[in-house]
Amino acid sequence: MAINRRKKYLQRAIVVVGVLVGVNILAAYFHTRWDLTAEKRYTLTPGTKNLLRGLDSTVTIEIFLKGDYPASFRQLAQSSQELLEEFREYAGQRVQFSFQSPGQGPDSARLAFQQTLVEKGIVPFNMQVQEDANQGYSEKLIFPGALLHYGSKTVGINLLKNQGGLNPEATMNSSESLLEYQFANAIYQLQQKQPPLVGYMLGNGELLGADVYDLLTTMQTNYLLDTITLQSVSYIPKDFDAVVFAKPQTRFTDEDKLKIDQYVMNGGKVLWFIDELNASIDSLQHQESFVAFDKGLNLEDILFRYGVRINQDLVQDMQSDFVPQVVDRTGQMQPLGFPYFPLLTPTGAHPIVKNLDLVLSHFASSIDTVKGGGITKTLLLTTSANSRSVSSPVEVSWNNLRVKPNRREFNRQFLPVAVLLEGQFTSLFRNRLDENTHQAIQRASGQPFKNNSDTINKMIVVSDADVITNAFSQKSGPLQMGVNLYDQSMVYANREFLLNSLGYLTHNASIMDARNKELTLRLLNPEKVKQEKSKWQAICFIVPIGLVLLFAAIFQFIRQRKFEV
Picture 1 (cartoon, rainbow, N blue to C red):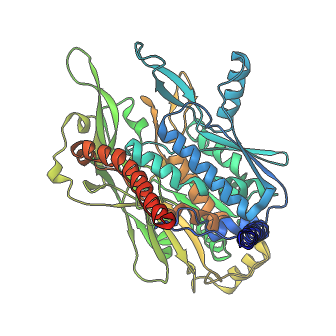
Picture 2 (cartoon, rainbow, N blue to C red):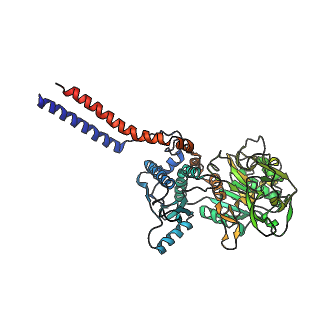
Picture 3 (cartoon, rainbow, N blue to C red):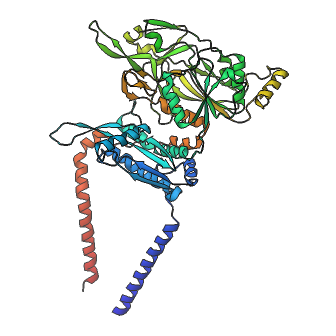
C-alpha cells in the first residue's frame, strides 16, 4: 500500500515538473502582456511600435541616472528601464541599453565627458545633497539624460522636463509621460538617411543675426537648412518640406504672396512668426516710451483666406515675465512683471503642446480664427485667464512696469497667439489671374496654377516672432531662446515648441502621438497621512504577523484532525 502511494506521489511530481518545463518552453517562444493600468502606462502607441519593428540595426542607449539619487530620480530611472524593456518586446535585441554615471573617474576625464553631454544638448541639473547629518548641503551636478547611438550617429535627449510653472511632483510626472516620445523621436531622427529640408525665408527683412542664433543652430542640428530669398526665385521649390518666416519687416507684394500661395497649394508647409506691430524691447533701450503701430506687411488677405486674422493690437497678461527696474531713489533694482511679456499657456489639446511648459513671448498680438472654409483651427498657445488686449496704436512705456496692474482690467481669457491650420486651403488668387499669368507660372515651376490644395495641408501661425528669438549676454554670448537675460536659470519651452511645430509639419506626426500620453499623478493626502499615520503603522505591523499566526493555527488544526487516532 505504501509503495503504491509513493508511486502515485512520484507520478504527480513528474507531471507537475513536466507541465512547468512545458510552460517555460512555450513562454520562450509565445508570450503576451496585459496593461492593467487605467491610463495604459505600459502600452506603446502604434507609431512607436511600427518604428521599433522597422529597426534594421542596433540602437545603443546610455542613460545617465545611475547613482545615489533622490527617490524621484530613481523613479525616473525605473520608468526609463520599464519603457526600454517594452521597446525590446517589439525591437528584440536591436535595442540595447545601460545605466551609467557621468560623475566617475579622474576630474579631467569626468569634466571632458560632461562637456560632451552638454554639447549633445543634455542639460545638467544642480542637486543639493547632504553628505553628513552634521554638515550643510552641497551641490552635485547630475545629467538626467541619455545618449542614443545608431551606426555612426549619436543624439542626446533630456529626460527631465523643464520645471517652469510646475511643482516638483508634477514636473517628474510630466517627465515620465514624455519618456516614450523622447526615446521614439530620437530613434526616428537617427534612422533618417536624410533629414527634411527646411527653408529659411529672406527678402522681407527677416531676422538674420545674433538674435536668431539659437533658432538657426537648432534648425540646422535637426534639419537640412537652406535660405530662400523670395524675390530672387520665380517659385518656392517643392523640395522644401517646410519654410519658416521669422519676423519679416517689409511689405509683401502680390508677386511675393503668389509664390507663397502656390507653394501651399502644392503641399508646402509654412511656419509663420509674424509681428504685426513694430514693437520690440530694443525700442525701449534708449528711450522712455514708444508708439507701436502697424508695420504694413500686407499679409492680412492671404492669412485671412487660410483661416486666421492677426489683430492690430498687443496683449497684456498678469502672467508675465519680469524686467529689472529702479524702484527708489537709492537706485535699488527689483524685478517687476511686464504685462507686455506674457508667458503663453499651451492648450494641451494637441501633441505639439501636450505636456509643454510655458512659452515666453514679447509684444504678442491676438489672433482671430475665421469661420468656415473647411479648415480646422486648433489653438496651440494662448494668454492666461487674466489678460487683455490694447488696440493699435499702442504707447509702450517703462511706466507700465512701475504701476501695479489692476486685476479687474485684465478681464479677458485665453487670447490665441498660436494657431494650427489643417485642411484643403483655397488660393488667394483663385479666379483673379489671366491665362497668360497661369502659363507663366507653369513655365517657371513646371506645375499648373492651382485653385486649391489637392490634399490635406497644414501650417502654423504665431503672432509673435520673439518666441523664436534669443537674448544676447555680453558675458555668455547668444542665449537659448526662452531665457530671460536677467535670470538665466529659468528656461521656458520656446525651443521645444519650435521643434514640435516643425516636427509635426514635416515628418513625424505619428511619433508625436506619444506626446498625448498622460500619467495620472496619484499622490497621498499629506494631512490624512499625518492624522492616520499611527493607525496604518500598526496595521502594517500587526496584520502580517496576525496572518502568519492564523495560518499556523489553521495548519496545526488540520494536522491534528488528520492524524488523530
